[in-house]
Length: 161
Image (cartoon, rainbow, N blue to C red; front, top):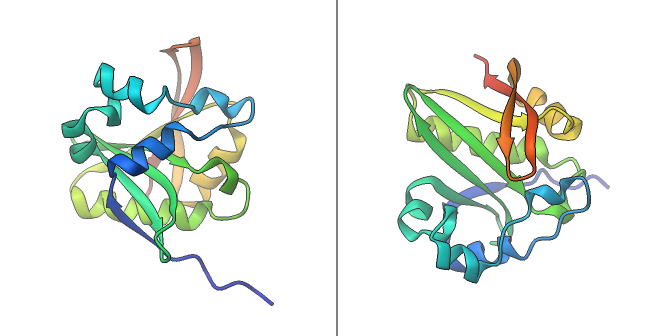
């Protein structure tokens, strides 16, 4: 029997969700996507550890039964909304990516309909690249970028249409 399609919605990224995200554990090579502890994020006031920044740029992706599926960042740039996306690690690779990305893209279009939508992805992350391509993104540029682990190569992918 086929499962019904997953239905997701956007909600504010609460402190409880932020704390849960900080506890997610990723298998290598995806472990670079992990966060500091919630206490450290708050102490340093970085990313969603800063309450103002969390409200302005971050959102939870929630299932119909109110389960945290992942989160998105809607980073404003001039004429562009850059997405940062992350699905809960135990859900990755299970075919949920298209619905997950569609939910995020629709929210980005709602927030800033006049903006181009793009994202950055490590060139080695083929699983994510396939998902983004299925969601209407195409690679428009490849470049080196400084990360906490040193220089890494990224693709910029832009939503087409």
